[in-house]
Image (tube, rainbow, N blue to C red; front, top):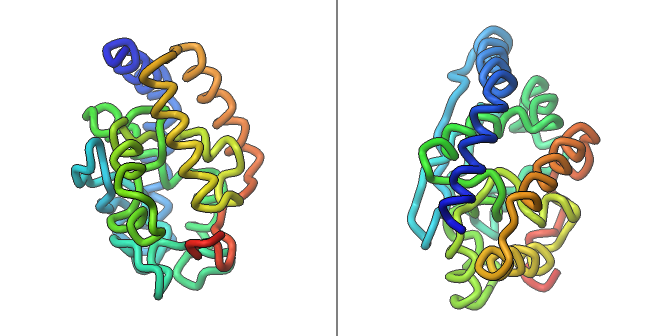
Amino acid sequence: MYLSKRIFDLLVVFLLAPVWVPLIVGSSLCIVIFDGMNPIFLQSRVGFNGKKIKIIKLRTMVSVDTRYDEQSSAGIVLRDDPRVTKLGSFMRSLSLDEMPQFINVLLGQMSVVGPRPAMLGEMEAQGFDPQEIRKRNSVLPGLVGDAQLAGRNNLTWKEKMKLDLSFADRLQTSYSIFQDAAMVIMAILLVLSRKAIYEKEGRDRRND
């Protein structure tokens, strides 16, 4: 199962390379020219079995949070967030800022399909049971997961966790390359729809 999923990941990375490589290069140049910032940055996230990884992103904000904090809403990006540049807002609407994570997939730190990698302390801050967190972390984080396809940032934390745990169960019992392929196609269509890009006010409350 894990071998077939890894093969699928590499196939997607290389087949889509003519798309994501030029997009990264072009977006990076635009960031340098129009925003005058270093286009690439590394952000600490939780990886497989809770190990800390550095995911690669394109810079869309003037300041970047690396750890989730419930009180200050660090890690939450709201609509009209003053930290997001105009170019960054456009890039986020098409998920261009996430494209460099294909490199994380290539390195084996992420999968194409799986729960989105959580920020450090994010799951704990929501009061989830440690056993649930361990189960969620028992699979490689992904570029796209069930939660993104079901509602992206319109879902509550509990709804997203339920879907992530369901994915972990499915991966162990009935993994299908064809299902992953279908999710990739659905993710592309969702990105093109540009819906549910930003977090909602108050969505980081534990009881939501």
